[in-house]
Length: 121
Image (cartoon, rainbow, N blue to C red; front, side, top):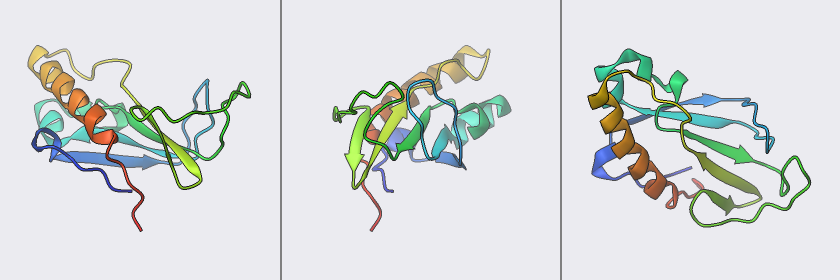
């Protein structure tokens, strides 16, 4: 897949995970997101911590409750036969306010960038 990144997140890094446990959907993998700048400021902000969130691929058209998934154009997109969702991080990766400030800026940039996601043909 391709995502158009703004200048604020051009140093993005990610790690693929084959399985992620979610209470609402059953993803078939995803990527945990970080940036080189965050990692250089605090090594706890590696992709393992997913300080910029996670993008999940959902192969089913329903969630675990049997409800139909509906693309919303912002955090849930349908591409081909699958859905992709951006999940914001649930916690911060650092106790340093400057690190968390940068992470907040980059999370906002990723929310916008996610809307540009395309399948890589």
